Image 1 (tube, rainbow, N blue to C red):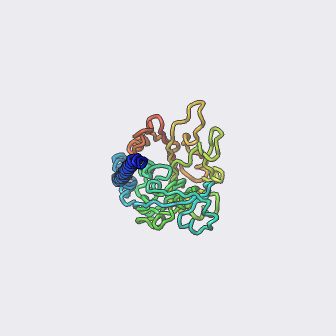
Image 2 (image 1 turned 135 degrees about the vertical axis):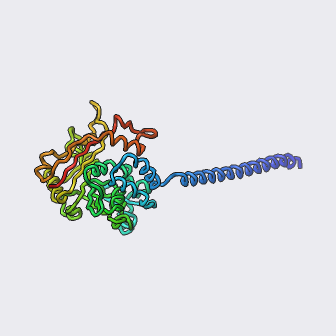
Image 3 (image 1 turned 30 degrees about the vertical axis):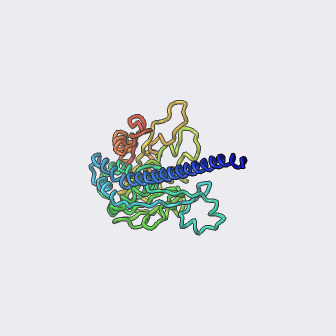
Length: 357
C-alpha cells in the first residue's frame, strides 16, 4: 500500500501536466487560427484596396491628358474607360518557350503532351502590359502622327509591327480603326484567345497576326494591303537589326528578309498617302567596357535613300524627341518608387516618319 501511495502523487502530477499541455496546445491552435483569419482578412482588404489595372490606366490617362493637344491622342485617352476588366487566365508553354496554348487548347492535347507543359496564370496587369508596360505609352507616338496631319483613325487600317500587346489596339479600335497587331511571340495568340479579345471592338476591330512579316505568304495575307498607318514602336531599331557589336541573337529582331525587301513590302502594303511611323524609346548606351545594349540604338535601321527608292517621301528622319518622351515617362510614373528611372539621363527617343507616294 505504501508503494501505491507513493505513485498516487506522481500520477496526479503527470495528469496535471498533461492537462496543462493540452490547454496550452488548444490556446496555441486558437491563436494560430486567429492569426490566419487576421492575415486572410488583411489580404482581402489589400485586394479590395489595390486598384485594378484598368483603374490604374484611367488614372494614367488623366495624368497624360495635359501633355497632348491633338484630337488623335485625346480620343485615344478618352477610350480608356471602355477597356474591359479581365479575369486571370491560364496559359501553357513548352519548356523551350516556342509554343503556347490557352487553357481550352491545352485540354485538347494528349495527356502525354499536356503533362510536360508549364502553366502560368496571367492577371489583368499582364493582359494589358505583358512585358512592356502601359499601352498608354503609345500616346506620344500618336501625338507625332496627330501633329503631322493624322486627325482621326476612324475608318483607317492600322498595323502595329511588334505590338507586344493588344491594349493600344483596343483603344484605336474603339475610335473606329481596323487594327492588326504583328508579333512573333507565340504567347500572344494564347493570351488573347477568349471571346472579345479579338474581333469587333467599338466601332472598329482588333486582330493579331503571329509570325515573321513579310517573310511568309501566310503573314503577308494576314496583314494584307491598303494600310493607312503602319506603326512600329520600340521594335525597328538600328541596334536590333544592325548591332554594332556581336550579341546573343536572342537579343535581336530578325525580319526574315533583307532591309530592301522589308521596305519594299511596306510600299506594297501601305496605301498611297499612308504613313509609316518608327518611334523608339531607348536607354542610355552602355559605358565603355560594359556589354553592348542593342536596344539603346533607336535610330531608323533603314537608310533614307532606301525609303525614297521604294516610293516613300521622307517627312522626318531620326528626329530627336527625348524631352517629350521624358514628360510622358514622368506622367506614367516611370521615375517613381524604388528603382525608378532617372529620366534625364536614361530615357531617349527618336522618330522617323514616311509617307507613301
